[in-house]
Image 1 (spheres, one colour):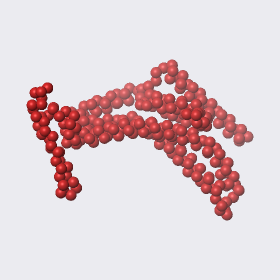
Image 2 (cartoon, rainbow, N blue to C red):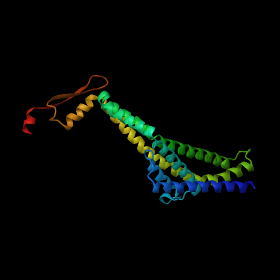
Image 3 (tube, rainbow, N blue to C red):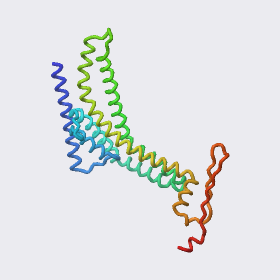
Image 4 (cartoon, rainbow, N blue to C red):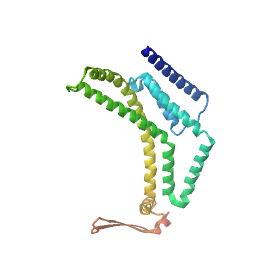
Length: 256
C-alpha cells in the first residue's frame, strides 16, 4: 500500500510539472513576457535539457523535467518582479546614477557602479549555479560513501548495509548525469556573467591610473599632443632605471 501511494504521488508530481512546463511554453508563444537578464537563455536551456537527450546524452527524463521546471518557475517569478513599476523605476534610477557619476568620479566610478549593477541583475544566474553545484556535490560525496561501504572488508560490515549501498548506487548513478548536465549548463551561463563583470572591474581599475591612460592615448594618437613624454621604470631595489622618451613636433601637424 505504501509503495502504491508513493508511486501515485510521484506520478501526480511529475504530471503537474509537465503541465506547468507546457503552460509556460504556451504563454511564451502567445504573449511577450518580461524576463530578467538572461532569462530567455535560462528558459531555452531548461527546455533543451527537459527533452532528455542533449547532445545525444541520455538523461533521466522525470528529474530533467523537475529541474527544468524549477528553473522556469524561477524565471517566471523574477519576470513578474521585473515587470513591476517600482523595480523598473529603481533600475532607471540606478542607470541614471551610473551615467551621472562620470563627471563627478570619472570613468572608473561609472565602470565600478556598472559592475555592481551587473552583479545585482545576474544574481539568479549565480543562484542556479550554486544550487546545482550543491546538488552535484551531495550526490558525489554520497556515492563515494556508498562505494566505500561496498568495497570495504571491515568485520563490522553487515548484509543490510551492503545491500542498501548496492541498491542505492544504481539510482544514484542514473540521476547523476542529469544533475551534472544542469550544473555544466549553469556554469557556462554564469561564466559569461563573471567575464562581463571582470571586464568592467578591470576597466575601472585601469582607468584609475592616469599614466597608463596617457601612454595609451599617446601611442594611439601621437600627433594629437605635441611635446615630450617620459616613461620611467624603476626596479624594486632602485638601482636600475630605464627611460623611454617619445617626442612629437608641432611641424607634424602642419604636414596634415
